Length: 281
Image (tube, rainbow, N blue to C red; front, side, top):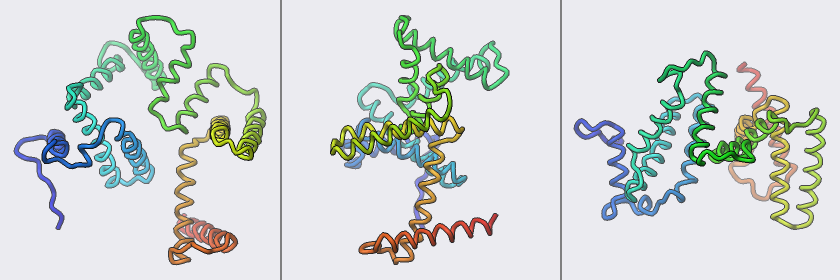
């Protein structure tokens, strides 16, 4: 039976986690991998754990969600530990800063202000954030306030979610097509440019044009009231379900198979899954 660590004495679980991470980062007896980590090297893990939390939520799996939230919390504690080692900040400073921010941005809860709807809360939140930005910049007026706001808003978002945020806010400000026909025309224009860039062999140009295609498709999603992140996540899951069946049919060996054979197995898997879903609904 697996052994589970216990919380020593009256130490609360969060402090216990801090002490575990401190031990992992101990210069003499710590873990070599943990000791090598920096804020920069941990960025991929922060993003990975955040996406795994989102995946657990989509699947409605509480046990999985608890585990993934723990993995994400570990990233926070690791960053706090690295900050503490450099005498910059610690976990208490992080907790204090976010508590202060929540209180400051919720005057309708912690103060005398009133907010009777979610929209009122959103407007108040944005106004407070704008005041904070103005204070941080010394109170000077920006010549591109929306761009500045968007840059701050999307800096921590995945690229697909950031594209949707930019598209929505730019359209709300008036940067918008007259009809969806214009969006479809832009999609075709960007696809043609992508094909030309790929044919030219210029990888950097092709990469830029691929980004333009994806951004324009995000605009299609916005026009149609669709969520590109959820759509792509669902497509990923469907692909894995079908691909798993193709692999199983070939005993895990896809090498040397013709595209015609693989396509036939793909279509069989697709039909089988559709039939199973129909029976269970």
